[in-house]
Length: 127
Image (cartoon, rainbow, N blue to C red; front, side):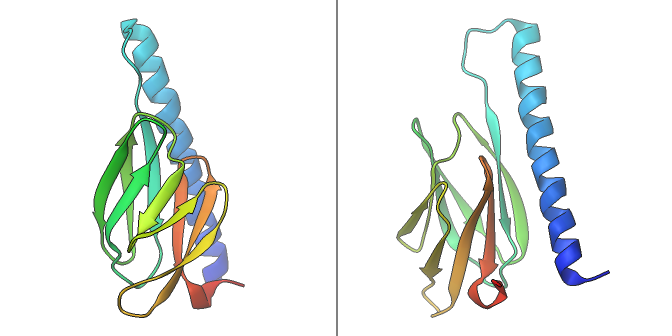
C-alpha cells in the first residue's frame, strides 16, 4: 500500500472517530436530560516530524492550550467547534488552510479536514 493511501485511510478513520464522539456525546446528554452544554471532541493530528510546542485551539466560547509532540494525534474535549488554531504565535482560521513558520525554521501546513478535524503536515509533503 502506498503512503498516500495510508494517510488517506488515517484521515478517514479520524473523521469517523470524531463523528462517533459527537454522536455519543449528544446521545449521553439527551439521555441524562441535562440542561448544561454538551461537549465535543476536536481531533488534532500532527503528521509533521516537528514538535509544535503549545498549540491553542480556539472556539467562540473558549480556548484550549495543548502541548503537541511530533507525529502524534490528540483528541481534545471542547465546548464548541474549534474555529482557529494558533501555533508559534501564528493563527489559521477555519475553513482556510495555511502555512506556519516554526521557531526552528521549518514550515508546516494546517489543513482543516472537517469541522473539528485539524491535520498538521510538513510543508514539503503538500502536493
